[in-house]
Length: 569
Image (tube, rainbow, N blue to C red):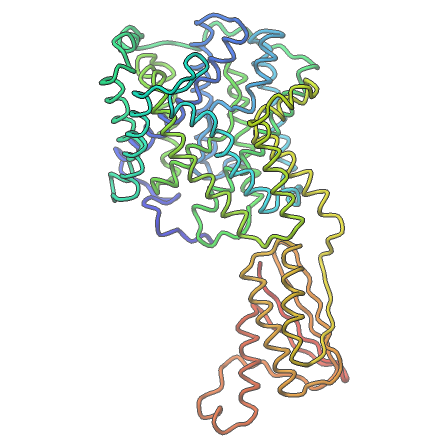
């Protein structure tokens, strides 16, 4: 049972008013428009014509509309039930360019369709691979989603590009004004202004872009000259396939799926204050919905799709995560796909506005990832999993030339810091799992030094397991309370054996000793009992142990006493 966070204005199951839903959907479409640069890059790199670019952009919008609606569904075999939009996936960029140069758009479409089939198959086995995705790996992926776009976002924000690398003062002014508007409305306003902070910020950015000449009359003329209606579902070149392209697209699919796992996990976390761990069944349904977007794109003639972290960041910022908004997004994307004049308003979005929007939305993803990582105890093993993967990922952006000599088939992995960090984290997690036992045992003498030994024992084991801090603290408190009671009541003079067993869902502690049994009452002794009964304080200890643990079972066999403590994780 999920618990709705107090900061959400419209939770996942809420239904906002119609106009509010449409405007919120329009905000998400504004962020989606930033990804439309990717299909244009594929066309340019392959040396194809502008008509191909227009068709590729339009079909990609239709596929994204199908994908966001499929993702929001809760009944049926697919859909996570969250607002988790799709965009043209950067993970597919390198593989798509390679396919376009090798066999044209027909090969791009065929391999994109095939990668969607691969992703659907991957979603079916994902639940059995839960051990590959502990919280620190998922958290790193979520954080890297924001970090990996930093170079692009800052470049747009500061007005630099390959053609004009010098900072453009007008563009910086527009970017800062746009970001300041978004942040100011989000932090210091409430209600409708907070909901539409992105939309208002974009409007300010467009207005300033017109005033400073970043948007020129020729840009406006492009909008006016665009057709009101366009039918993109013609001129499809068909589908071709290549065995040589399977590996690049398979790697692209895996990188895209890892990103989607992080995105859906973030959706789970932001919609439930009691979130404890990734729900792999829900993620499996979400990845299957993601594959529908990819297959639709390949079948119709678009670019590979994957979930959008920027849009999830927008949901966090505005406090609107209603999945009803997904239906508005899907409808608007399909409408724009058939109306170039309306789509041109977003396609011509000034780069400073793009940069400000990305920085605003992705800030939430970076922090969300760090929160997921820190929701678990961290030891040296997990430090290396996160640290080495983060450093390797950042290395792709800082020293890209160091990775160009890797084989061509592996380039999709090293094409972005996100995919590099994600693959490294999964591999390192597998390596560092070696030698970690699911159970640990300690013998304690009933004396005053037991508390220190017990604390060190549970700290070390909890960090190895990657357990939640609050669960380990409760277990330590219960075990320590028992040992103090054992000293006060002189339950035994022999060592007390404590054995802890852990899995992702449970922490169980068995306490064995030879001596007198301890009482675990359901109720706290009354004030009168504490004054008159010399054994009442000992019952307080037993009562506290029962309060810390979710379940207590005590038994005795001959002279050996056994106490079982269960903690839900």
